[in-house]
Image (cartoon, one colour):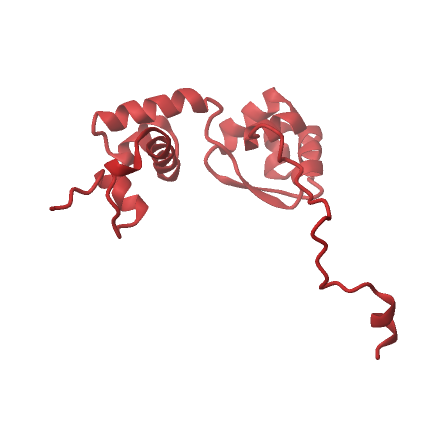
Length: 166
């Protein structure tokens, strides 16, 4: 028998009464924008969104004065952001005004505006438009209104509910 293995506790043993680590279990839903504001402040977050909104941004572990992020928000804010998000690639939100945008997405879609045109006019991604529409449908409409179908969810969101013959 291996001497090291005999001194280590069994790793495959599961302890059912052990507390689980859930840092955000009781917290309200926190957006990426909120996390960025906490790390660098609202003014720098708005500048970051203006420069990189809708794009992926690499946050280096140790930003230098010539890096993209440091040129945008300044070296001190870039260092503060690196402390939280260092070595991550963040999808920077397009705007901070989500609630108003969600209402406009639903209103435009009710007027039969295409998803592509909604995304272009509101300066957001098509994926976000689909997400808002899906969340609205799942929370507001009863399940009986949408018959089960094998079509992917994206196709159903594009076309609306599929009417099946009975």
